[in-house]
Image (cartoon, rainbow, N blue to C red; front, top):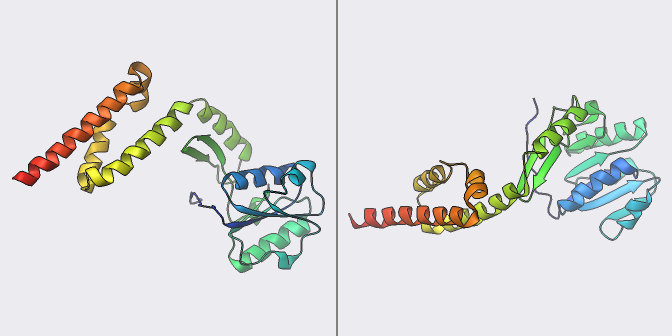
Length: 218
């Protein structure tokens, strides 16, 4: 059983070994996460070369000493079993999380299929046993998660920030969120519109802040 986790890669050094289409997909995902990406590949596809302003690119064979403790994670996407095994072994020695594409036995982590809408990011994994089924589930879930879910997550994030000041008691904040989710927010917005939902949220904030004020007068 794998332990699911989301990593903050902002500005963190990550290494990708390989220069084909699979490596390209991994590099693009890392760039979207604002990682500091280094790519080492004997041969490199044109699209990767076009990304050279966004990555550090070395077009040459991988050497064991290329993988050092400065990297937060490493991804191997080569056609060479020898190179992939070397990456995996070296990463294990340095305690660096390692993913070797399509070779679960050489991995210490798997890259999940993802469904993303704004701040909503759903990761899907079969613990490496069937990546194709993960992609199937991505399609199923992707039909359910719509842009509205991302917009709602962003809005609720702004409310959460307000509540730290306006409702400082954590127990009351928890009660606030239970109140908001008594009805499905997505359905409320779809049926009655954003203005109605925002008014409901503001009234709920007002009610809780009044409760705090009244309790303080007792």
